[in-house]
Every structure is written in C-alpha cells, then in structure tokens.
Image (cartoon, rainbow, N blue to C red):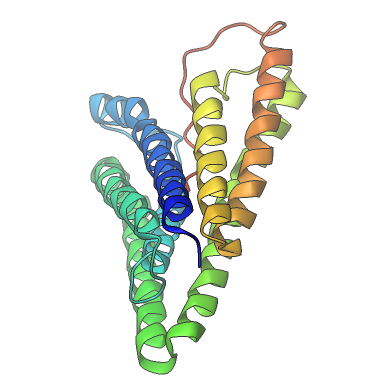
Length: 235
C-alpha cells in the first residue's frame, strides 16, 4: 500500500498519461477526414478500401469493453478513447457505404454485421460464462491481439517508404501522433501494472519511432506530397 503522498503522485501521473493518450488518439481519429471529404465531393469511394475502418471498429469495441469497470477497474480512460474511436469509425463507414458501388456496399454492411455479432459474442461470454478475474484475462488477450493487428498496418507503410524512397504516404504529423499515443498508453499501462496495455502499445511505440526515423531520412530525398493515407493505426 502506497503512502498517501506517493499514491497521489502515482494517480496524477497515470491520469496524465491516459489523458495524453486520449488526445493523441483523437488526432488519429480525425486524420481520415480529408479522405472522406474527397469521397463526399466526388461521390465515389474510388480505389479506397473500407477494410481498415472495419478492423478499427472491432479494435475500438474490444478495447473499449476491456476498459469498462465490469471487466477491468481503474482504466476507464481506455474505455473513453475507444468509445469515441468506435463512433468515428461508424461515421466513416456510413459515408463509405453511402458512396460505394452496390456490391461493395453490401459487402461492407455484411462486415459491419459480422463485427457486431463478434462483439456481442464477446460480451455474452464475458458476462455469462466468466468470473471477474477470467474476464480480464479473456478480454485482455483479445485486446492485445486486436491492438497488435492494428499496429501491424504501419509495417506496410514502412515497407512502402523503403521501397519507393518516398514519405508521400507517411505524413510526419500522423507518425508523430502514432508514436506519442502509443508511448502515452504504454506509460499508462506500466503505471497501472497492466501488461495487456503496455505490451501492445510498447510495440506501437517502437513502430512509431521507426516511422519517425524513416521520415527523417527519406524526407530529405523525397518530394513533398499532400495526399493523406487511408490506413491509420489506433490505440
């Protein structure tokens, strides 16, 4: 048991880390807005893919559930940021479906339905079959798997940057926000002694740092570009 003074410091630092993670995650949530402005303007999804937003929606739902007190107490800031993220993904998917071709529209609606079914199944198993400690482990492992799969998306971007020797599809602001968000939630996880938070976000921190290093190197030899990437990682 920590003394009152040390506990106050610990609580302050952990809260600050969680709030910082929320802020940087919000930057990532709004980053696709230019893409969807383009979709609305042209009334076409062109060659863009909606799959990253399907993955992001499932990730946000699972991570939000993990942060709920019924599953894990003391990490409500994980629930808040991912709940907001889920709303953003639903808005983006709604816009995408509205302007997509019929075949793609039906496919995306089917995938959203599948995400809802999977999440409902997770909630059912969590509340109906597991006790409190088992809930943390079950949903914790799911959140780790989901986060790592989301953080794997920058590997494609990193490969593309190295191959093209261009940072066109890896804007500095997004790379910096990814790094800072992952670092914040990694620190939040460490302060909360929660490996289900600090392990995947630690991986995200490393990948974010790699992106910043690549940007520093290749920006010197590549032309500036204004197009925003469609694939973005979330916490």
